[in-house]
Image 1 (cartoon, rainbow, N blue to C red):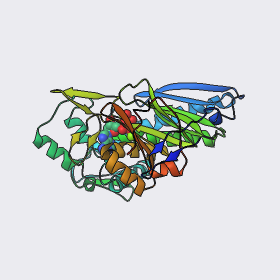
Image 2: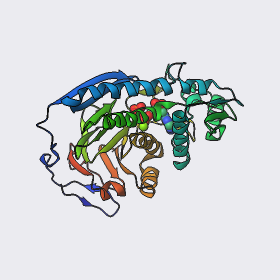
Image 3: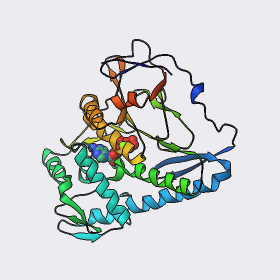
Image 4: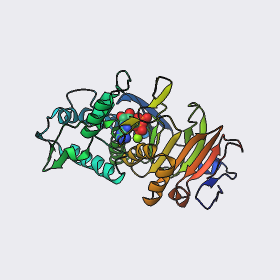
Length: 340
Ligand code: ADP
Ligand code: MG
């Protein structure tokens, strides 16, 4: 594939062939297994000789779900959420490390990603019936999402103030990393996992990954080609809510306490699935201007696909180009290609 880049780092399409991304293992029989986990479908594709390992990977995701789901009361994370202000409880080293990782990402992203959104998510009824809460309720919920409300120390979680974790922004990514580790430990040479749209794979060279058109979900706007790793997209279009003619997504800007309007999508490619998951949400919150600036400063591979008047604007980060991520196909017409 050839691509030219403009000064500001936006890819300009050139011709490309898909054949060069063809998988080297086409002659090996492959098996596809699907299980419903964490509220969505998870599909694993791997060589048929290793099909049994897929079941172990699913079991691992189910184990992670029973550690961090806040949709049920019996998980470790739900018990952390139930802990009152001033309380402290011992947690598993795995959960302690995960929560610390999410808090670190919150600090790194200037609070655009925030794992402590539980009270805000409930205030808007994101999981039940969407509503706009009073300004006072929003203020209280913003205060409860302050990451300083929680301390992870000495194998436990301590709360200085009320605060509740929301795993929706990092749970699937974490589970994917664990599932990949299980497959690799079982000696699986290559595999792909698609978990509700987030994809992760290893061992089979570059792959094509389609990015949905932000306004026409069943059409691919762009197909990118990337080496082993994980690709996550945040669009907020899976779930949108309308109130008084305004549309809102399920992604909340923790800094204002407001759900964001649908505004295109951002796709992140990273070595680890949790990183791709967290950063796609964080960059969606930041938006294309602040998001690209932040991503460039942190070496993140990302592409924004944003409707603009009657066209789609694709904006890529510098690392997208440095790592020679290819745009192998695009449905965009010449008029829709837009470069900043
Ligand atoms: P999807 O759920 O479609 O994969 P995302 O990966 O962007 O989309 O995650 C959105 C979910 O993350 C929301 O449903 C909510 O649970 C949680 N969330 C929303 N806003 C934030 C935020 N600013 N920081 C962390 N998590 C968030
Ligand atoms: Mg995400």
